[in-house]
Length: 143
Image (cartoon, rainbow, N blue to C red; front, side, top):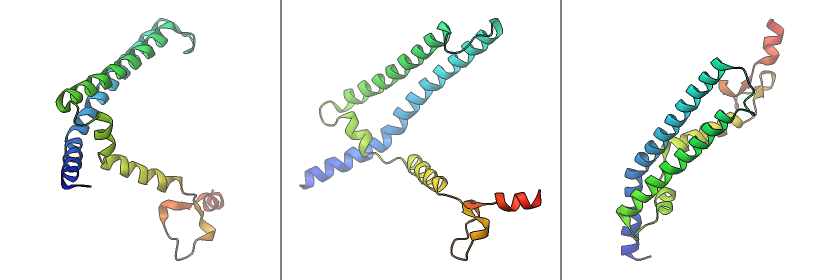
């Protein structure tokens, strides 16, 4: 890999770090607007009549609107980035090369939470982690 390639990769990563939060905020804002409209539509629907969610044409239309808005927001963000960088970088490369610390932390928490709990009767000095202990056996004894 030449020095020029390394410089281009570094620029791409730094640019992605700067732009990715903005893109995510645009998409998040559009999703929140869509969810707000869905909630208001559901409240209106509940006031008027009690029907099941699967048969409601209004809910289906709101779901379609949400999907349309989400796709439109993604397309707007993609077009904006592609206008800025033209043929130098693709949006997918920028997004894939960016490091999002929130996602990393969320993955770590998910991995910690997915570990099986240790029964309180099987605790040894090596595995003392209060968040990974199953207290149900002792709670049954107490109550």
